[in-house]
Image (tube, rainbow, N blue to C red):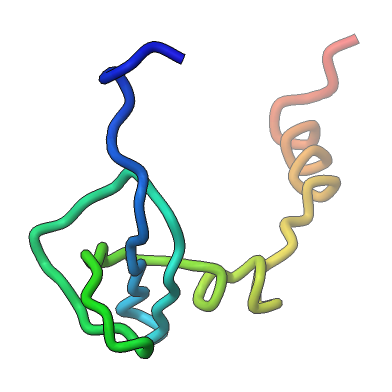
Length: 82
């Protein structure tokens, strides 16, 4: 790899404000805000709006769209083009 072209890669805490959940991982993202983690070390913290804890797909609250009904409604409205 070429030297000095990649951003620094290190530990970062991502905090989901909606679900009050945080996790420590490695990333190239940085932040001026810091947080003291469970292990006693201080890490940069990045606030996110959604994570696996609050995302509807992972929580099981996702809505299933009736795509077949939408197609039939479109065909009724605009007529089937043969």
